[in-house]
Length: 312
Length: 312
Image 1: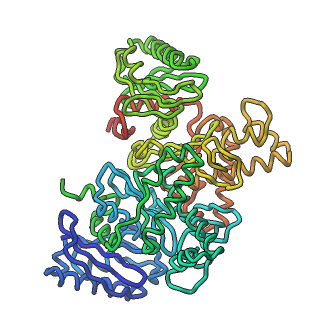
Image 2: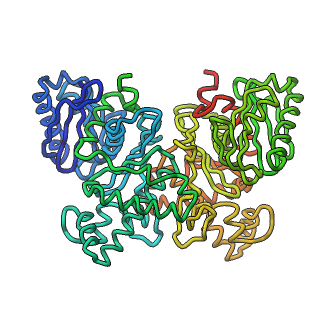
Image 3: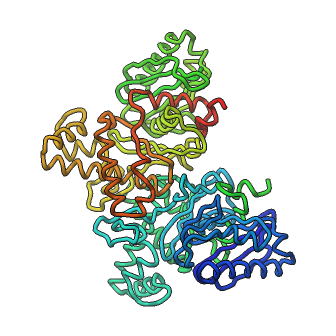
């Protein structure tokens, strides 16, 4: 049985899947902070999962772990994960030593991309981009059924493509990055309410007719649609699946993005020919996409996708 | 022996390569216009090539043809190639019937991408984007040694990513597309001289200290660098090879692009970590990259790259 862990900033989710990729068990614990905290909460989650499915951690065939930060999948090292308080941690080695099973480490958006691809029933040669809209903005790419990390692991870092030379300064040092106009943190800056879900607050205010909220929402949705356009024009994936915290908004978010893409299709015969509205959907709600994706990555290292590990 | 043809707007280039991809023979003829003209000039080029290498066209193992336009590689149909006067032509079928050898049709930028990958000595798992700067702007992608066309054959169409909402209207119906600010036609519009090489005229005027020319050149080069950034942040290819008519400018063009990328690296630690200047070079000069790439594609249809056809 393969196991996947999604280490989030507040909670850690662990799942066990069978050979066909079906979820056998699932547990959730609070995420610790810093190296000791993260290792302890992850080990705790995996012991609980083992109990839940009636094995010991040594009985796990492989453990894949998704981490919100920069990782080196080959060495299992987390280079940098600011929300977890990690700055250089051999997480793969640490976990493997404590649990007695092979461990691989992956960026969480890449893991979620592979998980969504699997949970939506896709297989090679199909391709997909997973556009993660959370505090930041980044994408994961599954090309011809396999995770595409790129040459240095930075494929899908479209949040740092500048789209507005007069825009705000990004933490990356550039101005007007896509992440500064199409993410949760962007909305929190443009529509400050102090709530934990700024995009929901924005949509609610716009729905009540607040003129400024309507304008901020329009710009936000336009920029999300721009991210879709960059992905399709550059990589030409079959479809773009939008995931991440913001997608808890559900259909109103998808409807707004579809409306922008339909408007563009009226203005541009070229864009119309790409049929973008048909190619954008939300990630399956209520499913642990990143944990399942981490389990699919398992202990196989780079560029191994669901297609290869699913039974024929 | 495999044969490749690059049908350009003015000339048609045909090459024969051996099993290792070395060029055995090369001919050039003027390109005809319209369906009859293009078929006639292509057949003529291939008969001359056959004479030059001492065989008949029936002796060609495969014929790959690169066309500047929209093609369907599976059927060998040219959907649309405005510079050749083609609007729906079963070029593959026509040529195969007249020459007695299997023919495959590919977009010319894709063919050039694969040709450059091969001529630069690359092989899987290496990846490359070929950024074609000619009248327009488009890219071809070679991922893990294989041509990546995308799900609908539009991978690399980054020329139609808008970068300036206040920019000029593009023929695609959008405003401020990358192609409108970083291509030969863009420079011809911004720096009208009536010469056949507007970018060369622009660089020469800027070198003499013309203030407006310096400004136009700066914007042009900035936008070329932006195209590089889009490709690396989205697909994270090992490197970006710039080709197309504009690259006859040679080192001054590359130096100018490198200077922009180095400036960005000073402003952004994130961009600095990507080491973009080390990852951008020009296509090998004086070599028939598109014709060689077309020969490598041969008669194998979709998603077949050099890596697969090169001897081990």
